[in-house]
Amino acid sequence: MDLSNISGTNAVLVAIAVFVILCIFLGVRIVPQSEKHVVERFGRLKSVLGPGINFVVPFLDRIAHRVSVLERQLPTASQDAITADNVLVKVETSVFYRVTEPEKTVYRIRDIDGAIATTVAGIVRSEIGKLELDQVQSNRSQLIERVREQVAAMVDDWGVEVTRAEILDVNLDDATRSAMLQQLNAERARRAQVTEAEGKKRAVELQADAELYQAEQQAKAKRVTAEAEAFATSVIAAAIAENGISAAQYQVALKQVEALEAVAKGQGKQTILIPAQALEAFGNAFNMLKAR
Image (cartoon, rainbow, N blue to C red):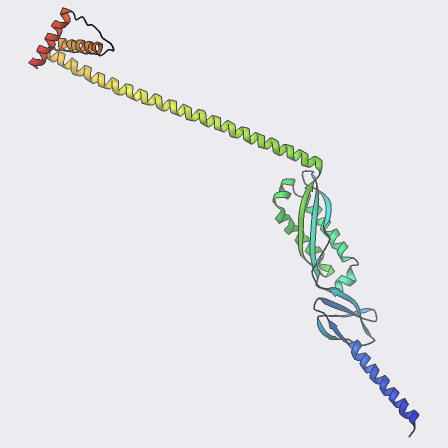
């Protein structure tokens, strides 16, 4: 037995075994869940490998790009913009995106992060230029939604999906901020003056209402008194018309008695001199009372 032939045969078998193992090693590709691999054959796009076990042709196919499909966040960017009412504002934005089609991302754009940041900046300037400053501050959610829609439409050819586009803050320059603060203080002072004036006006109105009510009540009381006096006068007139002079004398005597009674109720000790005629009138009044 020729030992040289045996050793040569073994070497060939070993070489074949090594070659097969190498082919298996190169032909089987395990892709992580968070990645997609772009395969090229002779410099041209061959396929895109998804997560799991994949097979390629050894020595012909190669993994040209390993692309992460995890969501990415661009660095917070700040850019100047001018509103529709010519106010300069500084806008801070943040963008989140993920790669959905790696073949587009690697073959259509060189710097995807820079391209998305530039696109977002341009869209933000354009959208803010359509709004006044008050609208930018009050309608920020609508502004963010419009920016997100336009960014998503423009980056579609790059194989990425913009998941979030946020406007973090809208800042003003010092001069504009100072002017707005002065305007705000003036508006607060105006509102305070208006509130004070309305309070004084309301107080005057309430005072006038109270005086009017008091006057109405006094007039009503006077009217009732007048009606009562008119009724009493009519009764007396009717009595005089029926009984003649005796009724008139009776009324005069009653008035004299009431007057003397008021004098007698005065404070302190008093001496009252009653004329004879008054006593005669009292007697006549008593006689008439008895006669009635």
